[in-house]
Image (cartoon, rainbow, N blue to C red):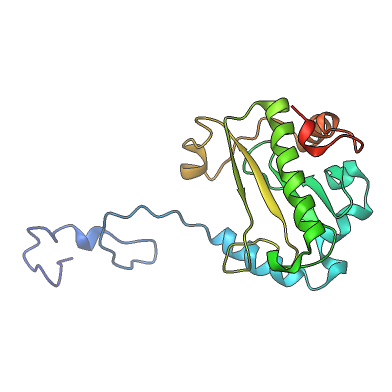
Length: 203
């Protein structure tokens, strides 16, 4: 099959005709590397639609369960800490207010202060338990901001180690998690300072 722009089949466009997918749609290679993640779009669309109220929100249901069932490592006065069910790394924690609010501007001063304190304590505990060399902290606000559950505010605390971003997630859509969620929950909960201890005193 000859290239319409290059009837002779020679020169820079000679191989274009051979670059097709299974549907035989033509494509021209470029310098971009693409990571196709249609599962992420399905998760965002489906996840958002499933959370229609406090009754269908996993972050609202979690405190009603046992710590082991909900993967909770600490319950505070205004917020709690639990493991992410789909962690980026072992020890990936989420800090959530008990109230079902979507936006960082919706929480009051007491909730803001406790979420900040719990985030600091989470970092100290993870350093004690697994000695990460860095962290990613953040809140994805709204569906377009990438929030998996946009209806209920939650802050990510992701421990990082040198070399943890290897080739597996890129070429195999596989993330190697070295411990079970139950094991991580037990370790983090056991290392969490008691409620009578100041949040900043864990070392």
